[in-house]
Image 1 (cartoon, rainbow, N blue to C red):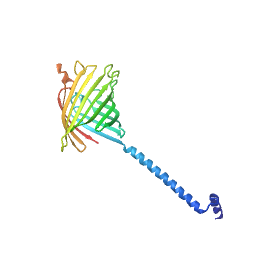
Image 2: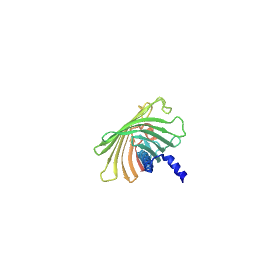
Image 3: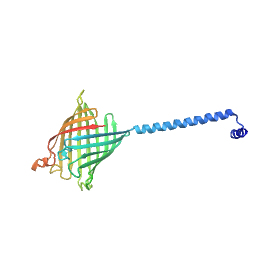
Image 4: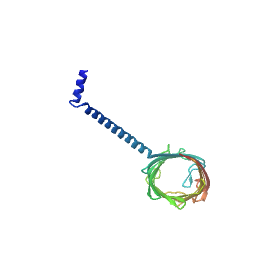
Length: 262
């Protein structure tokens, strides 16, 4: 015991036990501070994680129409997508659909930045890469910009998408697409009235001899929990000469859709 006491005395020197108690108390405070700091770091990491939102959708449509033109040979298509967004406004995602050409699959990869620039007005800038797996020289990249906000009871979005020339799939041709979408919810009901008008201009043949085509649609959708049922009438002003409009699936049609979002 004397040896143990000597070791303790060597450790403490000439300081009384009271000083040793204070040292222990100081160590306890230090450990507590470290624990609090670690907890704060974990909370901060959790907050960073909670600032990320993951959303997705799955949809069945009676005809996949892209800017008025059927991409599924006027047959039904299965579609789905997922988007990861951050509170800062940055987002990335992917979307896919069955189609009636290439190898039967379209996969889009997109990313951008969306932010409220003024009260009630949101701007969105980004780019979409259209991919058709199993085919060569078919991908298209298309930067886009849009703004959306409310005008009275209507939610309105207008934007532009541009596919620059020089891509393997387009050659020297380029294309631009202007559009406006609008939706008006019917008060105290699950129904929303929807409208769309778009204008495409291409350096190559697109719907008409002048490379211009107008598409439009009107419809209604109803939502219940995570499900949305929609019906719309879609058409274009593509020329009818020689049955071209019907051959490319740009004629008027009623389109049904049933989707689920999460």
